[in-house]
Amino acid sequence: MSTSPVVGIVMGSDSDWPVMEAAAQALDEFEIPYEVDVVSAHRMPREMIAYGEEAAGRGLRAIVAGAGGAAHLPGMLASVTPLPVIGVPVPLKYLDGMDSLLSIVQMPAGVPVATVSVGGARNAGLLAARILAAHDPALLDRMRAFQQELNDQATEKGKRLRA
Ligand code: RP5
Image 1 (cartoon, rainbow, N blue to C red):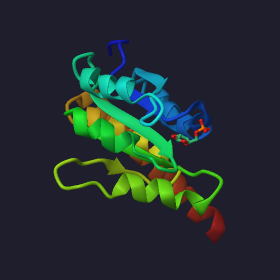
Image 2: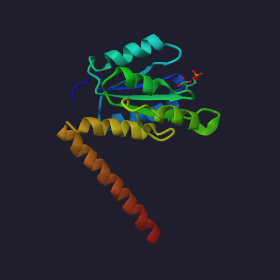
Image 3: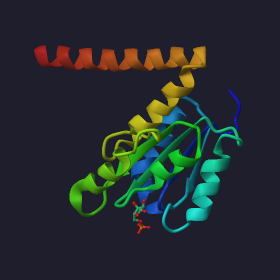
Image 4: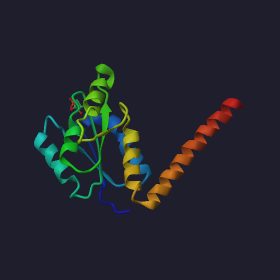
């Protein structure tokens, strides 16, 4: 696989990284090249728009965008890129991440963001991997193997409980 990034992982602040790094870890497991950056919708709106507008042309195939509070980053990126955008609601100190979740998930028709659970960055990484796997038979096989591993682990847990 090429080493140029095909997934962009962006977040509103470096304070989101402790949550967002699980997306990077998932992509590492599938050896999918990605880039990581802070692209704040409110603090650097012009750069955020440029990032979204240029992403596809630079070779990215999916964007994982995490933000907390008034989490407009995933939706705003989705409004300017044709790429699939996966939104990660980052929980902050107050409201248990409900503010982040609701501001990411309630997109108007026509501008989709695939929203994962609050703090669900690992699933965001895995979803990006699945999006890429749809056109990559080798990656599709790895995803099947990963799913089989999950299956085996769950089966093993059941066996231990029954023993
Ligand atoms: C959001 O504001 C960021 O995504 C972050 O979750 C939150 C707080 O940012 P900092 O004040 O920690 O930089 O835009």
